[in-house]
Length: 628
Image: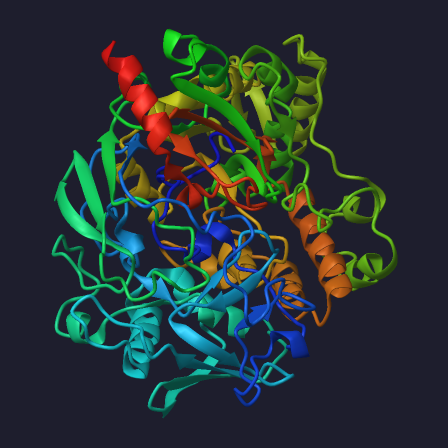
């Protein structure tokens, strides 16, 4: 998806197979393990936990369908880290400091997802998983082969230390994800059990399985909350080989990696070395790619995709330019308000500013018609609200009649539309009427508060100059409403620090969603998260109704109830006008030098770059053409 990250855009290859909890939005699970999920002779312990029904892959599976088990190993993958000035830490789990690219590939989790199921977790560090039908606890039996790089085993003590450290000292979202864990204890030599507080949060066994496991012996003597460039001890398939802050990070494959032959790893981690080069300027990065400085580029800009690759390297096939379809939920990309600011606390004001964004013109003039307007926080899924609420969704919402906007019951949500000509006078008149109703009037061609004369003024904060061409037309339309809106572009480190401190008025935001939402909704929208620096409730929403709807989503007992509860949450968020929705794309725009091959089957929910490999014949042919 283009331009969708409100944190500095990360590289799209992750050497580990662990999904980052906040970015991927962990999914809910409710079905008890069926007989196919149980491994024979393990006393009810299972190799996997499914979102619902049965895992796609049984206990004896050899590899995922979307890999080539015979993919050759070797070679180097070179990537760029765009719009980044530097990094300060190899600890990606804390608020302080920008984490180095590749640093999360050092660590592994108890379980990992497949990329062709909505949400099923398979054992990695954990050989077996056990949970009762009510999901009141989950136990993990560690793989006896699991080792840290120094050869010492991964133990239940490491798991317990990781949980306690991440919850107490890690980024705020860990506290939300793990808040319903009552205790964690060692129950046998290789077994650890998490017991949950009473309730209906049936996703917790899967959430706990996603937790990265840290080496207690390495971390317990240091200050976990302090950024560090000391090379940590991990258990994953890649480790930091060399680095230079502001320039590059190099990771190389661990030759004696303990898990290389596990079914979840077969056909992956095919590179001997992965290099991440830092580029502050996007234009420089693009030119460096075309010159062969790095190998693959996921394009975020529609304009660049349409016009920036008209070069001989693409025309003659040395560079492949390809759109690879996916089935990912597109979530909500948007212009996000910080409603902690007094000028944005009136819902009518937030609604009014939405009339100044001309998506249809932007899509035609700036994006070459590549995008679709987003109309739901759960876009492109069955979870998205539409039309008027009916049935179970209406029954849920009736409880809140009078506490939510009347439009929740009377109108189908859709963002303002235009004819794409650039003439949005009618929309601006609607916006001006809303502003006037909220107490804002025009005086000397400026919008001011009627009671105090205070001007309507705010700052739009960016970290990437690429977005300026998108935001500036919006600000010009706001100027026609008498609003003094300024644009400020800062470096990625300053942007991240200001974002964590909620020190902004408006940003380009993105709230990723899964096919089965759960605990992450509290991190996005809950009252508790609004006051937690570094949380993902960057908007600052504090609404008891939304808090209750979040709890309903988390406690959904089955798929149908989850759908209806999520639609209700979606509808209330939309009619709160907390964001101005923008756009989405259902494919990856990828350009790469023609030396790679990839499996015949692509994963539904990932690019799957870690399943690609360097094809010796293609690499030789490319080298020959480059030298001739």
